[in-house]
Image (cartoon, rainbow, N blue to C red):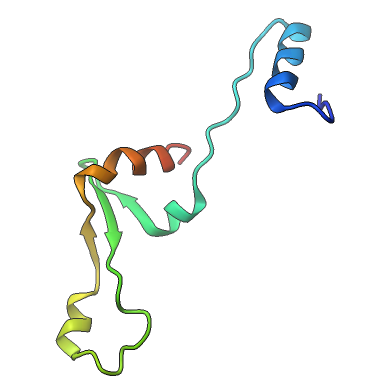
Length: 88
């Protein structure tokens, strides 16, 4: 049942009044976050390091090597990241 021209909340109320049950909208994952972030087994947020996608000709080999892999994101970002990845 799709009601054109109505907001999703109004359509939800109409659907609930006709079927006698409330259907909550699905939780969606931010796709940009799934490409950039990963949750560790202990609940920490892992991210890749920046600074290695261009202008690499003048950067020393050791600096580029140290930018490989993932690092743990700041603690402040955990709540935001969990909210962005919650549909996963």
